[in-house]
Image (cartoon, rainbow, N blue to C red):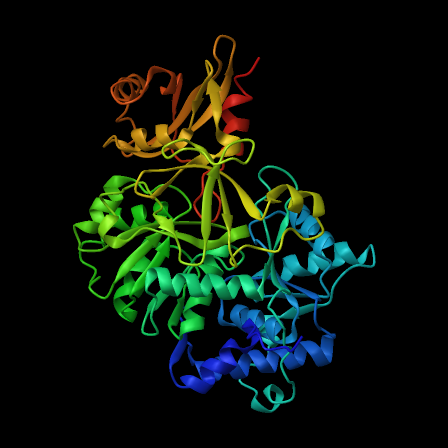
Length: 512
């Protein structure tokens, strides 16, 4: 088969041909401002170094342990240029967890920044004891804008884009992490879906602060913008003051963040005085966005659109049109253009509109399965549909609503209880800042709800008050049996609540 598919390794080369002097990357920390011509040279020079000095080639894995930085993107496109596979590592994991991942993917090289140099050396030494320690390469030694080096190597090409470019490991909250295989084809169609369904343009500018080891950092806006020729502004953290300042200073047009970050920005004193007139819209996902947050941005004339995605099926699978942001609040919208969605029962049969079932997806934006996990791949990829593990419903107009994770569902007195529904009610209380609901064993009902709530003002809420509030808005079996007040919910780096940690903390401690 003739190799004609345009893999990600050639994206920057194509951009350098079409818009060479267009600003492709702004790095807030270093002040670097790089055009597409410069980005292309940097990635190709690094690709030559990786090939000639470290033998990196098609199918080889290259791991990276670092904060967001221009060199991280150099690595992504250099590895793509070689037909190799990048494995972004979560820098929040323990050494034990990182070693588990490294032993699983067996990289031929470990890239790192200065901040993670010591950790990288420790990992190398631990793996070297079993003769599997990959050599190390620091960001500080990357070749940068070396035109001579950049011109020495021709790109690897693919016939259909099916070869993997990324292995992104799941968080591991339910067991040993699994590496999702994201191909050139998947990432290309994710970019196409984003541009078509969200109206992404070449004059769009986005601040990227979600870490690149997460699909949200790389693929909600970063890779789609490089596909269409926009500008990425790199931040090292999700500090709300820094994000607000960057939006104003760089005239950002599109912002992606999880609801928690948007809430922190809304509550920050700088929100009211920051010039946000450049924003076309904001995108949120990862969990349901509270109505007060949507309304708060609406009062500034900013559209807060909800979406949905998973690492395994692409991060941009649904889109809610701006005009529906309030009318269909809580909905993730409709499937993006090149995607198919169904809601199925336990036998994979379609459920009726309004009924809850598992969301399954199909389309060119779905991953290739899990790295070296054929059984898990077969379980998720059944009958041509990827089973997401998320429970959802679809209304009569075709709008989808995520009810919760299948594993989070609990049954109380024979009735299904969906934590997301109860959480939405709790979050509508003016005194509640955060809320999470889990099931706990009960001798009479089988399971009952336990709500963990963070008050907006310490000492301002009583559990009895919240139970009465829920009693006016929820069926009796949905009302939590117990409400625990706390200062903060445990969250991962993307802002998702770690319910496994809540169960360990509040359920196991209370179970006889």
